[in-house]
Length: 217
Length: 217
Image (tube, rainbow over all chains, first blue to last red):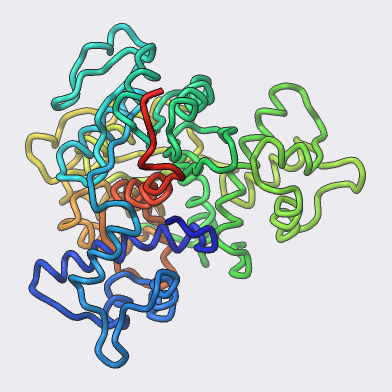
């Protein structure tokens, strides 16, 4: 069960651990130390041990973690022991790219429906999915028992889409629209705002030592 | 100058403040309280005051912040007082969507070159930009004095691209490839990994109270 004491930042690291473990498992590595996990993930071994300890201690001191056991355990914690359906709202450039990216992979979280309100987009296909009208949103989300929504619509439409998704049973939103969605506090919202990311990156590029002396060498 | 005491999470909130301030400014609001900023951003007013205090106190107690002054100041802090050029490596689905999204806006961080190694993509256009061969990467990055790189290539190619970008002068990377890039510690890397985002979202959808009893009402 989701433990409210586990910080969101720790939850966000679990899939990174899972990926590393699955790579090791494919390479027939059956046991891994937190030090090796640290080397491969970029997080510290203390951090990794602490994160995993939230869910019980799985490692054997001086030996490490069984990759099989930890993979299975992390998948259960994340709810990935079965495929998780998601809906995507917005079939513009970004939405279509996200859908193609997701549908090309054997992803454990899979987009199962795409919605748009543009008559020119409705009925077009992205891989094997039809773009459906937004008027079908509630019916499809309820029928398919979808709990995850991806919002890739313009800012002006995003709040309405979020509200309708949540009313239909969605509990977690990945929001690409550039605004702060207002939803009930028990709904988890992860924002990915490309303009914001680029603007904050600018900070780290803006004042380099010897900036004015940078030349073309 | 970049202050190493300012945490990265605070830097990431500055563009959110900037967006809210610019919206207010457009609506002819000349003064705003941290409480109103909190309402519009979703961050607490204490958080906002603390973040802004890293760069000096700009607000007037009991009155608030001058939107004009704070916009100008935040733009300088972020290095957005002039347009910031960025390069994009990878002209696949995601790369093209990112480029279109960026180029459609009057963005203060602007993609100025796109690279790919696929002969079928080289020479194609995304908006007004040609996709150039990766062999031109060093020359273009140095010539244009670009400090920001966006990596949207498959995992297998990402490390090499990161290394080459950094060697050519790039100081900050936005990495969409699903791996942990190894770069010098003074290089700032922000990862956006769509699979990881969806997997961590799954945690919040996986165990809803009354899960087994969820019905179609």
